[in-house]
Image 1 (spheres, one colour):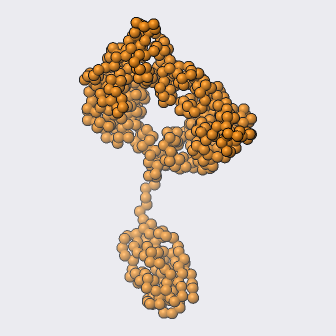
Image 2 (cartoon, rainbow, N blue to C red):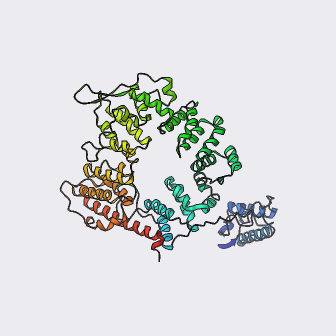
Image 3 (cartoon, rainbow, N blue to C red):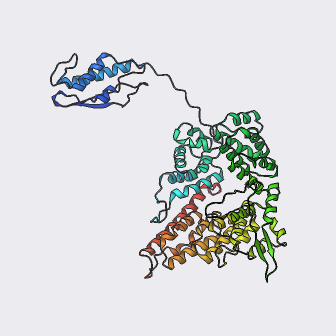
Length: 582
């Protein structure tokens, strides 16, 4: 007959069963159903010594079956399987009763206190929803009216950090998991998680990225005045710890950070020197010039190039002056014709002095050497060089001058790079031109990437105004990259320009999937207060004969999702606003 006997397996090293209690079934014919794996899992105790011989005998009997071998001290027959299981249970209990207590592990130190205020209850519930209920599908072309909660999490974190709230302890594991999967979330998550997040990350290898990403995550960053700790960490710390230390010190004491870097500069690896030198971008100033000038003679070409780039961002540096002299020799105004024309005479060679100042001699494939050298000279020269060189003209007047011998694109592209490097808004505006110009992007920009970089030098309001004008003239197909550099939430003129352009595209019967990227940006970047102005767009329009099949339904869903997302964002911000709480 069948009989089920519950027998606990022998315990593991800490007095608990490796697999927990198990039900063992002995079938007819006397063959025991106790598996070798489950019985033999207890073949050694906490001390590592073998179990008594009786246990080995029971294992052997179970493997062979009670119809072929009778358990010791039991009668053969139909009751043998049950007797075997009972004997195994007794042996297990006997073994457990004789276990020695395991050595107690050291308790982890308590998590540090977080002095920041707690989240309002409604905001805490919203965070849980954003971390667990991601009903919207991400990516272009998604259907349905449900908001994409995954894309709202960055905005929620930014608002929570702006208000200075602390993360709820129960949400820390989900937050760290989200940051593990998305590197773009890590800075905001680690700031929100605070000291408790770092404490928790030390207990789980899956979250070790937090220790590398957060300044001082592995070792607390020394504070001001802790000279000995700073020196010890700089000399003995891991690379990530040294980068964090240098960045932290540079942000508060630029000269001290530079002097610390100089103490070990000669012995650092080339790739490490490059990373450390890049930290000098923070609070770059004239006092950094001597160190950067020395770096122009570095063994590494990449280090030399970075040092030259940083020096050219200092218009008063000696390198900027040398580049200005070289660039002025290449560009002049020709007054012999009916109207002035810029003439360009590119360098005929790249001498040792130019190479030392960061000019790369070998041109990329498809580029002429002379135009390659010219571009590097012009982009490194201070922009105020050109007003003095070209008769006191303003940037707008200089950009408007015709350029002879097809050098216009090369010259203007170099000026674009110089304006971005030197953060010169006046030159950026001149190169962008009027957004309503027939030539998209104005007279100087040569690509959408260049326009986006130039826009980054302007104030937020000027950026929004220019992009709104661009969309009003050229529509949305070329505007996606430009919208990405505009401040969030979009200013009202920009938001209205985007919505109007989407409405026009819908009415024109355009293929709807082409605008899914802009629609996704609008969900995240439109001012939530605009939701009430969009209700007229929710109806399904009549489809024209030449429209894409089903386009009307897609547009209706997309606008419904846009309105729903805007209202959700408004609710999120209200929940995080302490002034709005009862």
